[in-house]
Every structure is written in structure tokens, then in C-alpha cells.
Length: 230
Image (cartoon, rainbow, N blue to C red; front, side, top):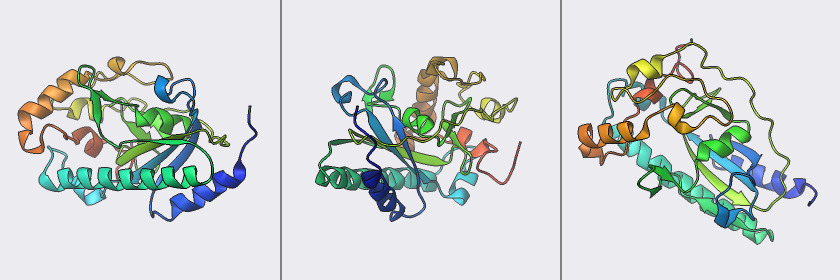
């Protein structure tokens, strides 16, 4: 096994910080990476917070401002990850960037890799009852992307505690009744937390003006990341 390359990791940390108010974490994901990139066993997670006023205004459903923010942050994340991929390759390592929001499995309603899996391992938060990543600072009000690489990082410590507790605001607020209400722990399948098919159908049927891409109510009602606290 290679020794940790702290020089390159510190360089990338400084590079990430030039992108402004972003979250980042370094994780080992060799056991959960897609098979085609299993040779890239480390990951950098990048997270960008969503504008608080925009999220606060969607407690009863999405609007155009939220949809525009969603698309804008996705584009910004894709630009950042491509720039980091180039930086990594220029330093002699390999890298692969996962698009912020691109569905590749239309049956299981999933992308190439769940960004939240690397984010949790990178110490950025835990998985909430909504099946979203919940960060201590921003709650679920973040968009994520991931870069896989073969740089042997010094990885972040896993956040061991789940802070959802008895809160059910996302469960009760979900208009599709898609959130089951179970607490997440490592190894719990997504289906035990949320019925993604029910969520997807609701968005398609009720928010066609946004191409069925967004709802966001579970994001808006979560006390974590808002002024309200449990």
C-alpha cells in the first residue's frame, strides 16, 4: 500500500478553498466504488450550500428560484470537479469526476455513485431519515459531487452519531408520503428510509414545470441547517 501523500492532499485542500464557501472531505471508498473505477479507491467530496432564503421559501413546494439554484449549483460543482480532476492528473495521479446530478439507472432511480456515501465516510455528516446527507453546519441544504482518485489520502474521521433522534419533520412534511421514518446506520439500505419511486412519481406528476427534478420540502423543513433547532 502506498504511503499517504500529504503534500498533494494539502495542495488540493488549498485548491478547494479557492472555490469559496464549500465543504470538502477525504475518504477511502475502495470497497464501495463502482467496479469500473475500483482502481481509484479514494474520494474527495465537494459540497456547496444552497441559498438559505431560497430553501426557506419552499416549505410548501418548489418554485422557479429553487429550481434555478439547483441547476446552477450542479453546474458549478461539475466545473469544480473537472478542474480538480485536471489538477490531480497534472500531478501524476489518476482521477474520475462524478457528475453532481445525472441519473444513470432509471429503474432504481440512481446515479453512477451516491455522493452522500463518500461524504459520510469523509466526515461531512450523517444520513437523515430523508435519505439525504445531513451536515452539522448546513443540514441537508447542500449539493454534492465526488472525485475518485488513486491519491492515498489521509482520510477524515467518520461522524459516529446520528443527530436526527425522534424528529419527524421530514417524514410528516413529505407530500408523497415517501419517507419511512427509520434512523439510518451504516449498512441500512436506501429502501428502508425512503420509497424513491413514490417520491419520483410525485415530482413528475405535481411539478412538471421543473421536469420532475426537484421538490425540496424535506430539505426546507429539516431543523439542521436552519435557524430552528430540534
